[in-house]
Image 1: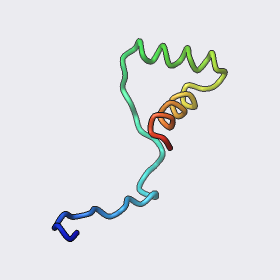
Image 2 (image 1 turned 90 degrees about the horizontal axis):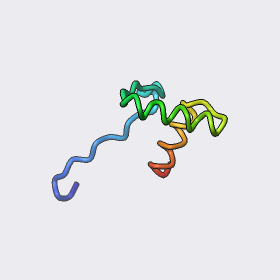
Image 3 (image 1 turned 120 degrees about the vertical axis):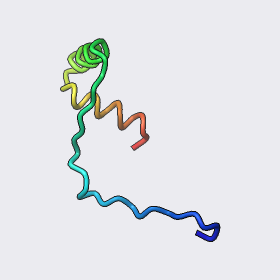
Image 4 (image 1 turned 60 degrees about the vertical axis):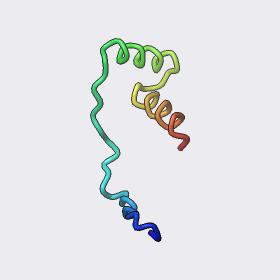
Length: 57
């Protein structure tokens, strides 16, 4: 702020539904489905695991 750079306000959690649509190549969709089946979990849970691992959350 001292340098005149604006700092955005934090985003409120209530503005997020926890859902979004993602388009991907068919081959990637197939591979994600196969990996999730191997792990005995849903593809949604598997993708959530991969995303959270990649972001460090």
